[in-house]
Amino acid sequence: MSIAKEFKEFAVKGNVVDMAVGIIIGAAFAKIVSSFVGDVIMPPIGAMLGGVDFSQLSIVVKEAVGTKPPVLISYGKFIQTIIDFIIIAAAVFAAIKGINSLKKKEAAAPVPPAPTREEILLGEIRDLLKSGR
Image (tube, rainbow, N blue to C red; front, side):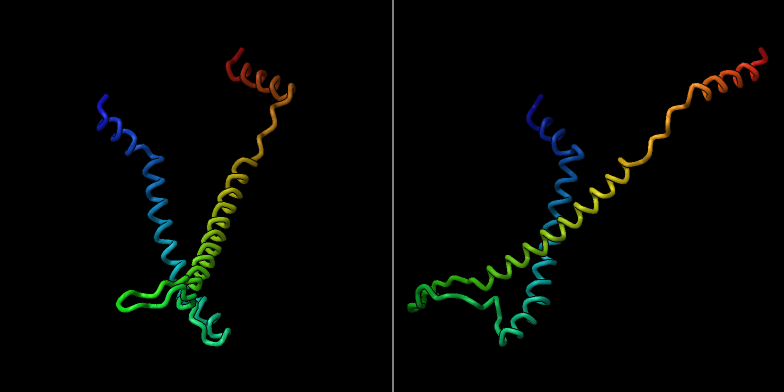
């Protein structure tokens, strides 16, 4: 079997396609959360802390020299990234918890009890009467 044929079989399997769709949706969701944190959550927090723009918070390690930019540790962006992560983790947790609860409901469907000996005998009698014996 050629490598191209093996790769084609691998690529068109349902799990690979599902995984690709999940990654694409996850990346789009991450952008939405980043915008939500950066544009909706952080500005009010910054205003409460005296007009601080978290994306601009940094520590200067080395000052700018001539045309070289300064070396910065941008801890404000790091704080925003941590908040992004917490929101994404909470959303994924809620989604998985919801999916698991649906699975439990499906698995918890009651199994009808087995027929009693009397019911089996009555069924046999009914069948004999129908057949005319």
